[in-house]
Length: 137
Image (cartoon, rainbow, N blue to C red; front, top):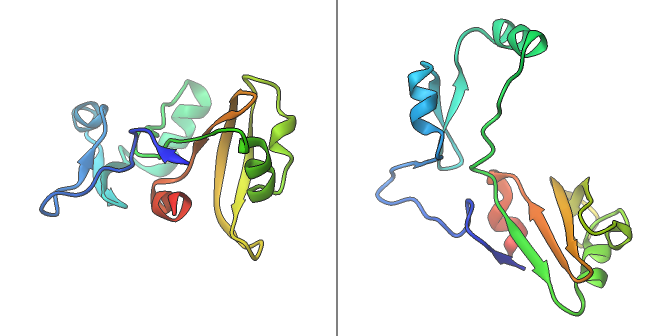
């Protein structure tokens, strides 16, 4: 597994939070910003119910730029993904993805994640920002 950009292996510099490509748009829309695992992210724009109804009536965008991106590849990639996930990931067709759980060796939940099958021996994993280091290590 290796991080390929995204949120890993970026590090905070002098306590300054990281910002996504949509940061300035969030500010233009008067977002109330908060620190989310080292990233300055929008918490809300108006009231929660108001935002919920706006998305129900129209459309919404959720900035996931802070999430990680991990490539799993190699001769044993299929065995590896079938070992660490509770679903048979290797059965995915190329180009398909699934929502699944990332478990530790005791079968305890570390993260919920989305994994894509890019090729027969290459996968793209999207862990949550809070768990990137745990997933990589």
